Structures are given as C-alpha cells and as structure tokens.
Image (cartoon, rainbow, N blue to C red; front, side):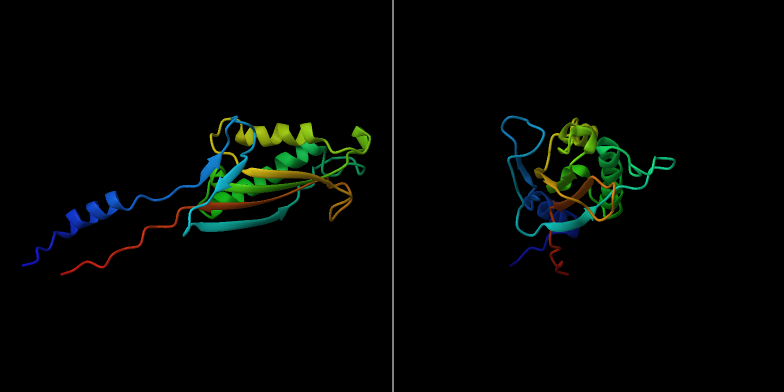
Length: 166
C-alpha cells in the first residue's frame, strides 16, 4: 500500500531536497575581480551587449561624454538598470569585458584608475565579483567615447515543479 503525502508536506520536502546551485566566484585573494566563476548547469543566463556612456549635458565638444571615470559611471548605471529590469543583481554578473580608449589627458594611455573608481563604487562592498578583462582599443563607435562594457550574468534556474499525485 502506497501512502500519499499531503501536498504541503511533499512541497516542503522537495524544496528542502532540491538545493539550488549557485555561481561559485573563485577569488582567493579577495581581489577586485574573480579569478574564475563557475556557473552550474541549468542556470538562466543574461547577455548584456556592450553599452556606452550618455552625453554629459553642457560638456565641452572635446569631451562630450566626460572623462573615463564619468563615462564608466554612466555605463555602470545603464548596466545596473538593465540587470534590475531583468531580475538580476550585480552579484549575478559572472563575466565583464571592459574596453577603454586611450585618454589624451593621460598621454594616450587608458585611464584604468578612473574606470576602477567607478567599478569600485559598484563592487567594493559586494562579496561576489565577476571575472573580467580590461583592454585598450583604438576607438569606439563615437568620437569622445572612451568606455564600453559588456557583461554576462547567470543565476540558478527555478527548481522543476514535480506533478502532485491526487
């Protein structure tokens, strides 16, 4: 004779037994970025295209998007809004690619420190940081743009619902 558990008991047992896997951020030195991030099978993934900064109202024509720090802050704001609109948070970001154009005020070299100030405004207080690459490129889509950032985010998928027996 087979006993059938009440639906509430069965649901709580299933919830307890189906632990959702989480992303594993490998960051042994607690650095600004993860050395690697492991995403479990079955995770939901969000790919955010490379985003660029907004124009700064009243900025001079020679720097219509501001300096690297300002541009990075603008891009991080846009990424944050995109993540939130899709039900993600910053700690769900598993990979980030940062493209920086050389800053004429820095002798043509990328302003890594300026980008990091804006990055740290987002990530300094968070435990889970993304794996990341930062590269200098010759130019972006519009003159004066010095920052483009793309991210991939992942979060555990919803556990499968088991059909209830009547």
